[in-house]
Length: 93
Length: 460
Image (cartoon, rainbow over all chains, first blue to last red; front, side, top):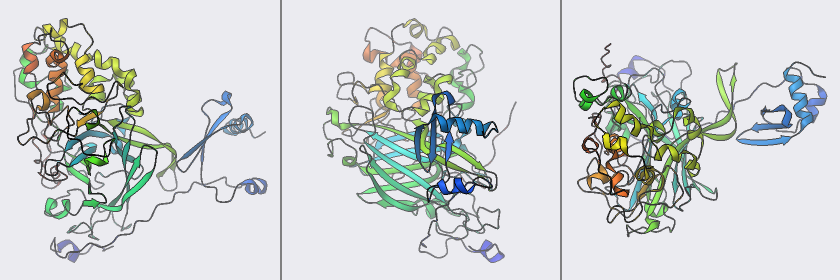
């Protein structure tokens, strides 16, 4: 990348020809996990698991939508939904 | 208009807002079809320092249905990637952008084009295709059209052409007048709240959009894989619509101030016939319409056959549309134009019928050649190569649709009806006042420059 200077601002537009190949790097975005994950929970996480979003629209249904990458999996797991809803209200038990 | 800020949710998301769709047999390459979808409405050319650009987090697409069920048989997807070359400057460019690969351009974009067939099989047609900068001004983007348009026009495999980048707005409409209680300046003396008749004012004058254009061989789009030559052949007709989708979940990262997307892509904008969602669908249903697919448009058909605007015209222009006011039948003419295409036998020697499935699609009969001297009023003026047979850049779709809604097309399906005289005359009185169209791909005029353009004239 050219740094701004008088020469680049005054360069005669259109001088030079030929396209330069430009590489495009994919941005990778991460989301912070729990601050202090327990040893047990860390051990339970599959290798290579990326950030994800879990969405419960209706806790009574027992369904949780898990989104990671461009995929979505709907899981029927009333116990997981119960733990998530307890966590959302600050109750872990 | 024609789909600029047309629904409450998409009006808050201009990067994904599909403003217009065009589909026409290419006048200079009549063995091909040109498909154009514009996004990001009402761009001020001097809207820096963060000028308008495509969204890296938006999946743009142009869909073609050729099987009569309104499902996409061929989809072209467009994904963009933005690069920041110099992270230590606030400038869009650190000197003149003398060519599309200039290192003085700090924020280049690149596009990947993918073709997806009905079965979901994907073929990448091109990667990292250069997108031109916006037209900043005479110092930053000198000789804009000559420098960038050809450089950003890419040849893809299979005889296809592709361009994506900022262009002049092609659509013209008197925005300020029409949304002031339906006033049409040339006829406003007859308005319920009258004022002296005046010439129309093009509300999109001096504004830009972001264009995605792809030109493909006709055989790439037909169900038979062949080039149609018989106008009356049902297989000669394709249905076209464009869309923009975002990932279902969006999480803002407070550390970076940027979002991350999660989950499948959900459609947030779609468009085929101009003004469909804008003036046909009621406000409370517009967001849902944007999220649904054309094949499900049956639920919106009642808004077509009983259009609100047809009821408003006689109220807003007392005594001008008495026959329209008295017409009580469902509007089968509008249903044909917008939802199924016009069947054989309605307009002699013409059809663009895709079957009984009601769907908002821009229907193009590929067997109809380009017209050497096109008429801006298209089919209703006897020019079968124009809207509503597809849509060309020059078609005056506001006037065409105004006249259709006012009853001018009812006799096509109901010969007992005689339209009001005003139905053949009504117009917003505008024409294209932006850069002219070109005679070759991408056809859309070069964008207005930021330095060269002057702000509008405020008045109260």
